[in-house]
Length: 297
Image 1 (tube, helix red, strand yellow):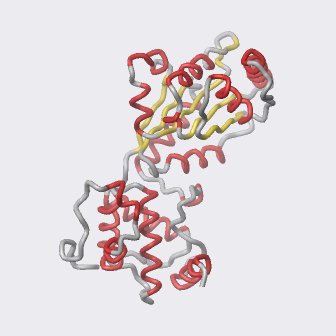
Image 2: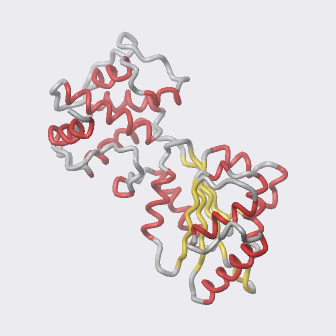
Image 3: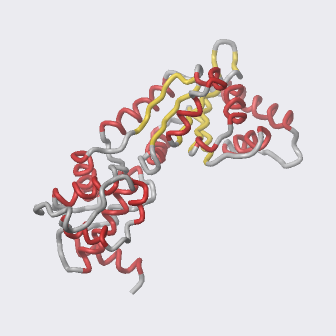
């Protein structure tokens, strides 16, 4: 039996309409925890106030990309958005990434002057049409210092008192450390809105698991409280890792013909070593059945 068939069967077994803990970002499953609400509010604040640069950071798998997808679904027709992921290269390459994200031509033989002129004319044309242009950089921690300085220069393009471009930079915590460097002071001064998305605590993980199961069609709490608490302990509250461990736990419960995921189910997943995400929280205590012998609920 293939993996896809097994997952479909476990959905049917638990009464689910779809897989609740996919690792693919899905705005339909967005869980509005306190930190996620504040992060999105800061995104909206940055856009509405025309902040030159908005900065959102968080650990790998914290839910940053899911927030971006939700933002993309909520903007109006008066906003033109270019989404750039993992941009790299010199300043000419960066400008090519930007133009391509905005569906503008950027031929290999074009010089930097050609590219910049085309970019500037595009911004002016969009402004004349009553539209704002926002460039969103995902995984922005991979940008070099030179690229960040180039982006800062982009925000200087204006028409009178109106700025024609806004930047949203989303990345891992090292992005925040980069921006705080003394040689990027001018860039930091252009950051008008910023938020760091922290991991979930134990009560939040319980609510997160219930929420995703509910969206997927569950009518009961499939995970016990103590199972959810062990999942928090093993993942550090990082949403992507929570999804991974929950998904594996559902597979294990299904193979045992158990309609509920208990702490012992989660413990078996950990003991078998199939949860590789645990490497990211290696500072946590070692998991073993003898040590984690709390009564299940």
